[in-house]
Image 1: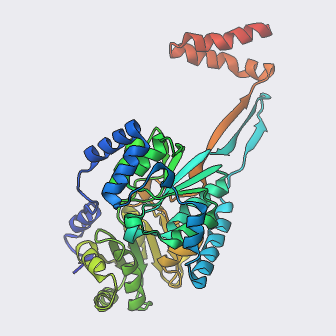
Image 2: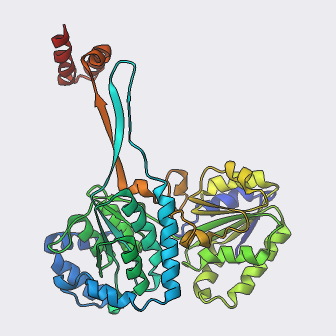
Length: 432
């Protein structure tokens, strides 16, 4: 049974603080194992990747078969039903249209001294996109990672998609084709991350690695950060729904279960201004759990990590939402915009009762790779910007250098950096 909490409870602050600090991440310590895997891949390259794939995915590979061939991909995607192909293409078009609007603009201007200042944006040269395999194989995640990279202008896109027992997901390969991905490697785990970061004879290294994975993949991304860029270290899924009584309890129950069915460690929270409505939602969740296909996952998620919080008003709801800083935030109220304006910390917002979070997972347009575990307080979801970097530009004229140079020299001397100051002074002296 989920927790039932009300802001009017005497012990509310204590119970809410405990909810915020609830540890849901996998506690297994895999860092030593991952460090050994990375070292092995760095030392032995393709041989290590093939051996580790045989051990963990029960798939025998050689350097020549690490990647799917074009014929392999054609054969797999031919099996995709027409309805699923059309839906994936529709989703890709909407995701692309949304992310094209994120492209930043170069800027250049002349300031009052005559100096020209500005910046320009350029894409990383190569990106490696990790797509989980097995039961957690999601073509939607490939679209959400690959399309922003392609829109950003990344020249080389490769995917690692583990295929345990040699079983590939045709929709993942179709998503790769739709997204313009050049190469799909049938490898996964920490060994895939290591290969992307350091390269092997067959796999060329990349500049940025994005995409979700298990504890081993997360640990590997932490370890290679600095050698390459990464998107984020994502934890279990989470959703916060703020809803008043003017909602169908079953709709809200399904929204909560949409995240609970991901993982037994996922978290679903309802904040409502009506305690009776909260109980009705809990009853609806229980009813749905009787028939839900993934009830063996969703039920423990709801029982162990779920919560229903009753508040006095929507102002309290907004304040609590900012403390939770959820990955997904649904605002199921009649006028959601003013409520949204009062909430600063959320990975993605879904406004109004007609906007279930699942629309964002697949076809809404915004990215579904989002910050978890309260990291929305300081980070954002995946975007075009994750595949670009900004280079600042400055051009001084003799006049502008004369206007600012002496202060630069003074500051350099204050930091005991003599050559810094002299590099400015030599030019100033040449102007006299």
